[in-house]
Length: 196
Image 1 (cartoon, rainbow, N blue to C red):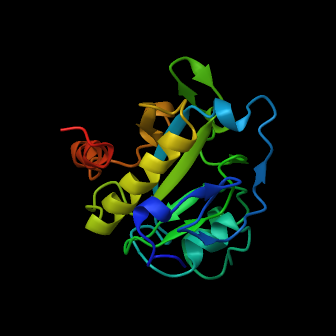
Image 2 (cartoon, rainbow, N blue to C red; image 1 turned 60 degrees about the horizontal axis):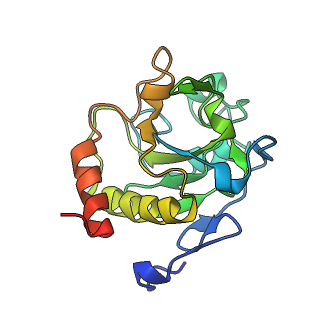
Image 3 (spheres, one colour; image 1 turned 90 degrees about the vertical axis):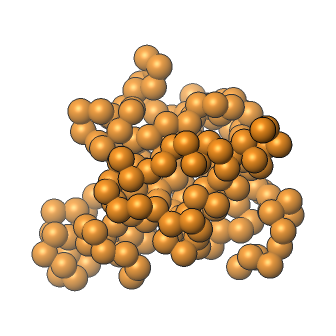
């Protein structure tokens, strides 16, 4: 881990964030119709496994395709899913990266943004460990804002195209939910950008 580095020293190299723990998922593919320079959307999600419980290995196990269906009754319905996000930000701010930002993670599913479907093709997906109705932590907001700022400078087509999973798949998804404070997040981004 490189937490002792200042934020300005963190970087993205070949799609990997230097601050994150690297934990490569098999659940990704190459962006066939989209080069890294064409990545134009950041999608914010939430996840907890089991639902409403934090900590433990289960989110990583799911994204790595090794979730034990016997570890919890609810896992029998999901253990065979082939899903991933680019990053997970845990409650303490620890970041795990599963897929290079240059590659396509399988986080959005059936989705559409501004009339453009298949959001996985052109987006980056960040999971916050949490639920729709439990407040996120200070550390999560700080780390999300820092990562977002770096992503925006690396993948400049993202610019202001930042949305929740609920907005690109409104019939299916509700995350990051009402507990996510969009104003706080945007204020932190403005501070990092030097905007008053």
